[in-house]
Length: 208
Image (tube, rainbow, N blue to C red; front, top):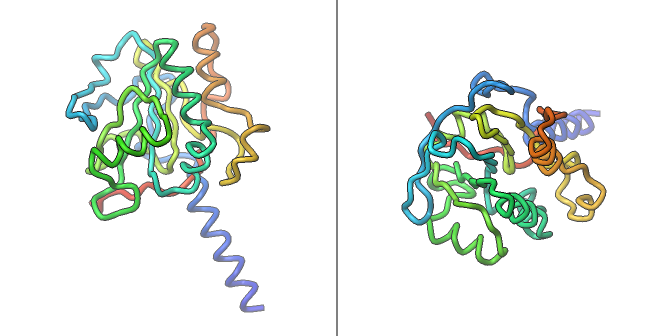
């Protein structure tokens, strides 16, 4: 009985780690201005959200060691979505908020090598080892996805899809919330659902 209780507790704790909480105090509201930020990419180039006004922007949080990230990159699912988006003029910023010494923290060339190995196509990979951008958005997991409309408002936040597993076989039958939201924005329709539960590995933020 004691073992069963311990096992149940462990499973619950694991689930809490994998599935992002419904909300964070710092998480921005749908329909409100997305938090402005300035970040440096792996090539040393600076990107500011305010300079991207007029474009749809996707934010994707990444950790190369996370099995949930590996699911979507190993299958080609994330790259396919990136290429579809950027081909339509959408800016895709992949953000690495892992602190130094933690899983997912890589030097710039490490991130570039990962992207090249997987034939990935984000607009840029932003380095956020201090966690400033991640905390501003309340990002909790990898991947955690956000979409910002051309007028600078937050239109979507949550998971990439509705299958919170590490199994690549689940991708085929999943509802891809990000693709669905981008299609709705392009058609001038409201995003529905605008908020979903993010899933993945917890972001390894720098201790504050």
